[in-house]
Image: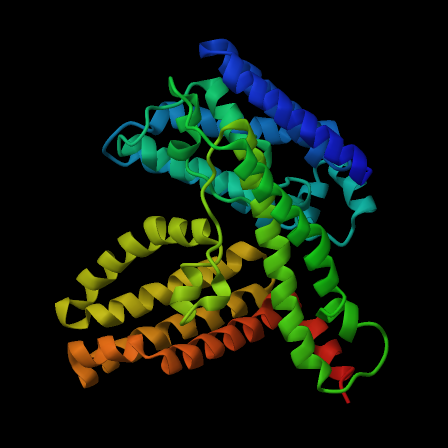
Length: 410
């Protein structure tokens, strides 16, 4: 789809959404908004084989809602069935090789003939990871009494909400539904428009400029390069990923804000992070919060019971390793993603034990003075920036691509 046409259709979607939210009430508003998002999802995100994939995606969401309807009551083990249903769909769609399904479906065989390089069906199911996390988190919110169970049309509107479909943020249903209360939250249109404009500059200008000096564009151009070019690509890939990802999130937050729908923040100046733990409190914040609430908190308690009170710190370290391996695998099916998760687990675990040792050595007042020292902070921020940029080498390249890159350096 041509960029200008996409931009025009997106403006039309936002205008229609704002009109529906602010002019309609009750059931008509809920149904109209769900239909608008279904139409927007089809237009903006369906690639080849549009109708079959759209119907399959819709069937996945309907089955998720049935699981929510049947199993999301308080207490017992049944809510966990509803919680696991979207995650199971995520595993089946994103991690089972697409060639497996090609044995049973002529449509999938035709799709693979056009895109033979794609490992799984996740390429066709845009945003399936974010859908799985949003909808599984909704189950917990219903179970814990944070929100009432949504109706079918409310659920459709939430799952297919266009701004947060492709790359998040993982906006909780409790935040999303505030708009559909009696008095929608007031989000100044000027501020929302400025946020969207900033995102467009990041995504369409700064990210594209930085992309020219990333691994694929600089080091894999068919020519030999000096080793000096490697740290250049390390730096500019980090900048590219930040401007690309945060720019899209800014556009999503701004576009949703123009309709009056609040969306959770996903970035908070990650370049200023003091350590790798702090980095994940600033980078992809909604993903960090999801894994903190859904995996880290319950799993750390389990490990603490197993290891005993004397080894709580080791239980926390073990939980960190599990969480970041899952974070790595969530990003993709390749082994390089697991290695990326392991690298960040190492960084967070090292900071965990370093902080414990520093507190014992310096005492409370000494540790406070250590954290307040601007020179120490400058060194910590610089080291964290370099470490996070370097580990993205694992994120950006498969192992065969890493080998090719080192082969081009002389």
